[in-house]
Image 1 (tube, rainbow, N blue to C red):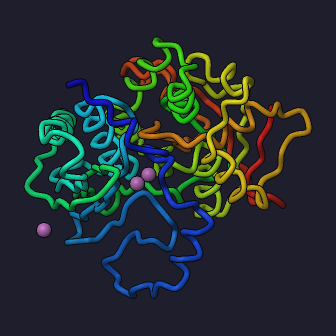
Image 2: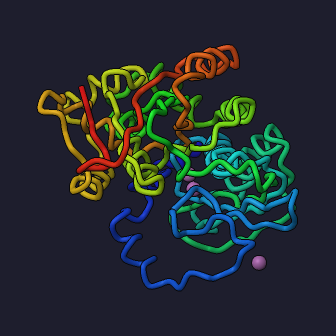
Length: 346
Ligand code: CO
Ligand code: CO
Ligand code: CO
């Protein structure tokens, strides 16, 4: 029996996230805990929490899980694991151990499908050097999978979304468009090449990008997932108290993403993300509608967005290219806080 996980879901991957607006509503009632050893918490809505153990060691803790983003169970496991581990890389940490988080309808698919998902997760975890040492399973429909990951970081070397400084330039390490391509695939509109490129990008760990960030002592970064490039850039600008300019002409897109957007293939998550960001964003009058929606396309397991002092940007870029991250591009800049905190240019 050929298993197709996509038949079981409406929105998969990071498109299934709660809208950022709703999340802020929910989180605002949570008390913030006062503890000098909490180095990063939800206050800045960063990728992971960081807790200091001693002067040399802090723990990076994060979890992510979502419904299937592709048909094949093994590939879904790989993508979910790469996505979960990414938040540790985005904060400059070294991922070390993880727990499986899995929900699935026990009677709907052969058990083999679920072991394949887990096998995919182990495959990527071992590529990252992460040991999976436990987990938890719930009977639920549609299936969901991901990891809770613990990493190490030197407390002096934490990379955060609040580390962007005026004068920096922004580098993105993976092309965007996974939300559009996956939606197009459901409608039978995506080209095979584009789909396999999207799957390849989503399975790719942000490990090499993180190694380059550490080499250059970069202090500001985040990874691009469910809120889209613009949504995560906005969160970074907010946390850093700066304004971010994105030049949408410079943003690399996967395959025919632009054409698909032009044909009207715009997933609902993009409108939700736009709705969240609109009030704080200025849109260039020349900004093309398709590129505007690309900026808000929900990415699953997207690349790193790093804020890099302009003097070293070319060297960082060339190291990223040498590390095999060929799509890495300078896509914007950071300026002092202005009227709006995100500017989308053409
Ligand atoms: Co993240
Ligand atoms: Co996350
Ligand atoms: Co348990």
